[in-house]
Length: 306
Image 1 (cartoon, rainbow, N blue to C red):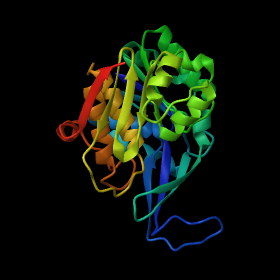
Image 2 (cartoon, rainbow, N blue to C red):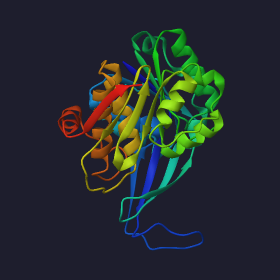
Image 3 (cartoon, rainbow, N blue to C red):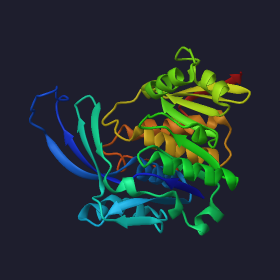
C-alpha cells in the first residue's frame, strides 16, 4: 500500500484569456471549485493508476472539506487518518490561460496542522511506499520520512513547492522528484554545476539517492545507481497543465511500488502527466491505469549505464 502524507485543498479555478500582470484586473471566462492539494492529487493519481492508497493530512471543519475529499472517497482512498481541525481547509487560487499555462496561490490553512503521527499503526503495517510533498510542515515531512525509513518503507519525495531541504530529510528518502526549476535550485544549494541533461545524474551522485527531473512537454529524466535515462511523450494538445506534475508523481509511485524497471516506470509516469494535461482540473483530468499503460506504449523511453 502507498501511504501519502500531504496537503488537501479546494482549488478555485478561474479561466482567463491570459494571465494578469501585476496590478491588472481582467474579466474571467469561468470559475470552478475543484478538489486539489498536492497530497490529495497524488493520492488519487496513485489510486487510479492501480494502487491501494491511504492519505494522511488535515482539513477544516467547513463546507470546503467535504468537496475536497469527495473524489478520494469515491475512488476508495483510505481517509481514516484525515484529521479535522479548527482552521479553514486549504485553498489554491488558480488562473489558467488559453494556452493552458497557470499561476497559482496556495493558502495552507488546515494543512499547517498535518502531523506525521496521524499515520495509523495499521497503515504503517501495510505500507510499502511513503509519498511526500512540501505543502505541509517540513518538520512533519521529515518525521514521516524518518519513521518510514525505520520501518523499511521506501520513501519518495516530490520536493514541491521547493524549499531548503534539511539533511535529516535527504538521508531518509530513496527517490527525489523535482521539476527543472526545482532541480536547478537544489543543485545550487548542493554545489552541483550541471547542464539540464546531466543534472539528474549530478544530484543523484551528490545525494546518493535516485533522482527524477520532469521537463514538461519534453518528458522526464531519471538517474539511479548504475543507470540513467529519459522518457519523451508524443506531442499532445494542452488544455490545462494544473496537476500534471502530481499525476506524474502519483503514477510514478505506483510504477515503482509494482517493481517496474526505471525506463518502464518513467514512461508510465510521463504518460500519466501528459494525459492529465488534456482535461480541466487537477483531479478530474486524471487517467486510470489502463489508459495510462496504453498511452505509455507511445512514450519513447531508454536508459544507459551511468
